[in-house]
Length: 183
Image (tube, rainbow, N blue to C red):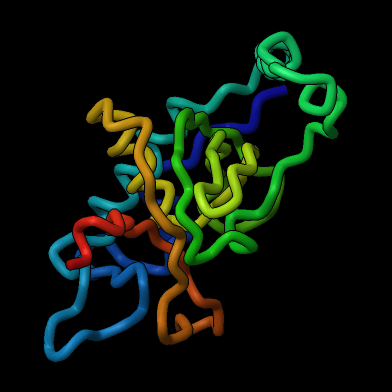
């Protein structure tokens, strides 16, 4: 049975805001500028509810996706590798080339009740993997990247420098500067 979609008010409450609040998703202040301060809580909640429309709750579709990965294997090792989903938090500050994104409904209580699953290549090792992340800022960023047709794209997952009110270090995506652009 499908989990009911959150209303904007429920999404807003899960994000910890009120309709006219500004939600600073990465919890840090740079100088006197608060990143993302122009995004109201209500706007962010609308994105979350829009993302929920993209959730695939079809077990057959998920099984087909796993089978497609197996059929696309290029080696015996790849074919026989475990189909594990890695936590995005374990891959911070690493260049990840995100190739495909989809959204799943979370079974955890609280939070935004949606998480992203994305296929990416860790460009520092060449490792291909499937990653999961439920951070609100990352969800919105991935949604917009998909909406803009910007995949594949190389980014890094970065935790906030300061903890949020509940003690977590929220994640967000940042562009990776190619080595040739650093000079």
